[in-house]
Amino acid sequence: MSRFFVLTLIGLTQGAIYAAMALALVMIWRATKVINFAQGAMAMFTTYLALFAIDHGAPYWVAFAFALLSGFLLGAVIERVIVRPVESAPPLNVVILTLGLLLFLEALAPMAFGGQIKSFPPAFSIVGLHVGNSQIAFSPFDAFTLGAVLAVMVLLLLLFQKTNLGLRMRASAFNPEVSGLLGIRVGRMLTLGWALASLVGALAGVLIAPSLLLYPTFMDDVLVFGFTGAVIGGLDSAVGAVVGGLLMGFALSYVGGYFGSDLETVGALVILVAVLMVRPRGLFAVQRLRQV
Amino acid sequence: MLEVIDLTVAYGPVVALHGVSLTVADGSMTAVLGANGAGKTTLVRTISGLTRPRGGSVRLDGRDITRLAPDEIARLGVAHVPQGQGVLAELTVDENLRLGGLWRRDPPDQRKALAEAYDLFPPLASRRHLAAFSLSGGERQMLSVGRALVARARVLLLDEPSLGLARLVLVQIMARIRALVTERGLTVLLIEQNAKSALSVADEGIVLHLGKVVARGRAHQLLSEEGLRHAYLGF
Image 1: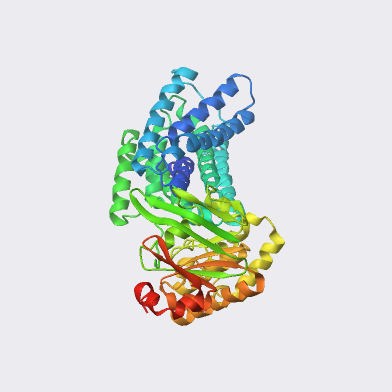
Image 2 (image 1 turned 90 degrees about the vertical axis):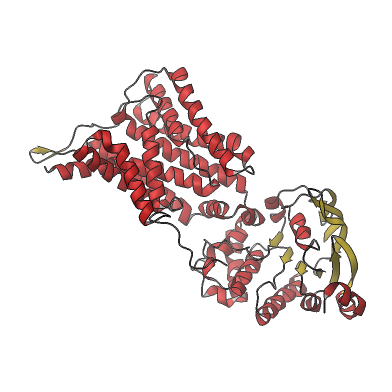
């Protein structure tokens, strides 16, 4: 099988995870205009919680659901307790708070779960599938990763576009003041936005943990790559986040495969700079036809 | 009945409203007039809960709503159509209208109210699936008012509907609102800089000057008081 094809398959799976992380960042950005630098650390923490459950005898799927649920709750609590009180402060204050939260969670994890590197079990085999006589770089777990990310994205799309709850959430993100005048409980909608975004982040955590191993900073690179993907996509666009995340997956896989994995992070930077030079507001920046 | 009692609002040391009182009876329209900076917008923002007063109270049918949050006040049937930027530009016309009635949790009646709003403002019907930012100023104003109707608002707070509108469009919109006041008992507080057109549709008028009420009376009386017109209303 050609090298390029192998790298593309790896890039697709990794890209799906970066896309999930990018989507989480974009959802929070759209809801509260905050870049949540703690997104990766939150996902790290919920992945540890899943492993904790597994170590105490819980089946994989229970731990998986536990990670998503704890991500949902963690997002809601953080919005209520940390973000809400500084809502009216300058935006930079909240950003610094999320950086503080990142440090806090990365310090708390080794205290709570031990600092040593741990392995995290996958839901399915991570041995490549056989097609005919040859083995390809695509395992059942990779298929599950793609399917899970896709399912979450479709569900979110349906929620936002087809339900009244989603309509209320979008309205609250676009214009909290007018939404309040329409009888929408804007605070609840923003909390829910953070909760759902953290759920998506938690999903990225449990999906990538088997291939990265679990340690307190294991999501840092994923956050950087997801954030780069989100910026490439335009930060305001959910579709852009997904496309940007996938692009990052492909690009980093090619960079790592052809030039060595040491250069992956540099590759991310080069791609970011290149895209922003050509399209400063990202690939999918919302173009306003007319704004009065 | 909407009552504002001895309302005082300040932004830091700047007092924007100074002991303002007014009453709007059910099924009537009161115009609040005055120049820029008279405190008109502050008055509606305080009634709808967006601005907190320093003193005084707002009552709806005798109930004190002064300390309620904007969404709670909206769910009591008070619709505030803010100046200019009242529509959610990123959402479609249909989504904007539907948002007005979501809090009522009465889907059949919401659909009925939606159809009525489209009947009342036909230009909206032909653009229902377009993003609201593609609308003209007049269409946006129709959308804001239509949304208040989908909310089945009992009290409508209109902040400068004439802003940026062609006169003919404004006259059409105000005629529709006037009809709702007479036929359905809608209660309207109309904020206007354009005193002449406001007084020609309203029942009562109040003139604000630097945060104080300087004149009040029947709309047609205010229209004919020459001294008042020259001093505060500018026509």
